[in-house]
Every structure is written in C-alpha cells, then in structure tokens.
Image (cartoon, rainbow, N blue to C red; front, side):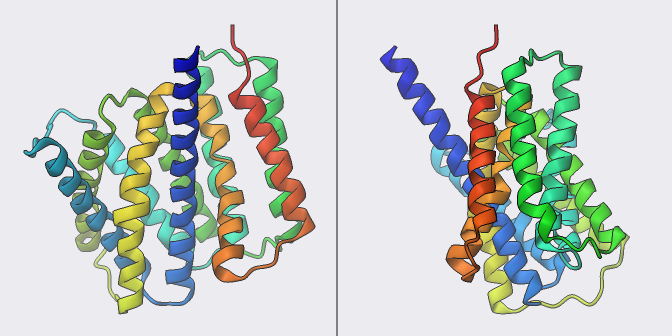
Length: 288
C-alpha cells in the first residue's frame, strides 16, 4: 500500500513537471516571436537542434555509448517536427489565448477519438471530468477573444495540435523515454533542415536574446519536458493524457503573470478551480 502511494506521488510529480515544461515552451516562444527577437523558422531550428544535442549528451552520460535504433518510429519524429514548426509560425499572427485554446482543444478532441478507437474504458466520472475541464477552459479564454484572427495561422495551430496528439498517442508505446525522445529529436532535425531547402526559407533574422530563448526552449523545456512526458504516457490512459494537458493553458497564464507582470483576474481564478476540479475527477476516476 505504501509503495503504491509513493508510486502515485512520483507519477503526479512527473506529470506536473512535464506540464510546467510544456507551458514554459509557450512562454518562451511568445516572448521570442512577439518581440521579434528571432524568426519562426530559426526559433524552431535552434529549439530542435539544441534538444537533440542535449539528449545525446544525457544519453552518453547515462549509457557511456551512443546507440541509434533504426527501427524506431519515424512517424513520431515527423509529428514532433510538424508540431514544432506549425506552433512557431502560428504564433506570428494569432492571439495567444485563442492559440492555446485551439491547440489543446484539438489535442483533447483527437485523443478522445483515439481512446474510443483503442476501446479504452471511459466511465461517467471521466466524462464529467472532461466536460468540466473543457468548460473551464472555454470560460477562461472565450470571453476575451475577438476572433479577428488569420485563418491561415489558426489552421497552423490546429495542425500543430493534431501532430502533438499523435506524438502523444505514439508515446504510449514508449519503453525507454530517454532513448525514444532522443531518437525523435535527432530525426526531427533532418526534417527541419529539409524544410529549409524545400521551402527556400528567406528573411531569417535572429538576435542573441532570441537564440538564447530558443536554446532554453530546446535544451531544457523541450528535451527534459518531453522525456518526462514519454515517461508518464505508458502509465496512464490516452483519455487521461488528453485531459490533463488542459492544465497547460492555466499554467501558461500563471507563468505569464509571474514573468510578464500580467493581471490576475477573477475569471482566471474561477476557471483555474473548474479546470483543476475536472482534471482531478478524470485522473482519480475508478475504472472497472
């Protein structure tokens, strides 16, 4: 019994840390692109390259040698790339709140369908939790949106959400979080370089601060965060993995208040309570 409690505490801590890193990725990306410190492609390039290098170093330190598994899933690496590149370009001309709503609403929708496809058991308690969490997210973001947004950039965020959902679903089969995540980022670097030549990217620009933000996003919040996320996924249901990510927009806004001096509103407080309640109902629901 005591062992199960410790295991649950470790799982919850790992989930919380991974969600913090996911939220920080949004903050770093917004800070870099909104301030025009770096272009979207360069941010993605430095983010993916630095994540790959960081994970290689960690893997070498842990295993004393580097082994490439050619049989790993290329789809997960491609989905990681699609998520990252669309995520960066969408934030060039989309409101932060609406972008977050689109991203995690799509992630939740895709993962609900995936859970039904894989015939996961979903009881009424999980349904109530999911509906409550989504309602809280809509309550938080909908009243503040004008919806005067580029459909092109909104479409990119939707594609990013689909890609991240697929990446998450594939991660359910991960047996070695560090090796799988390292492999995904190494292969994603090939896609990001190929993207440059296929689409002949021009107007590249970057500053020291912009590169630093991209490197932090890659080497810390992406590299470490995604390893933690892949560590969590095999231990929870697809539907649970989907709903707990609805906590990321809340974390992003809280971090924005802390680091960007944004205002703490009553709407934020109420919606936070609603979303957390929905997430807890879903996570601790009992499935026969």
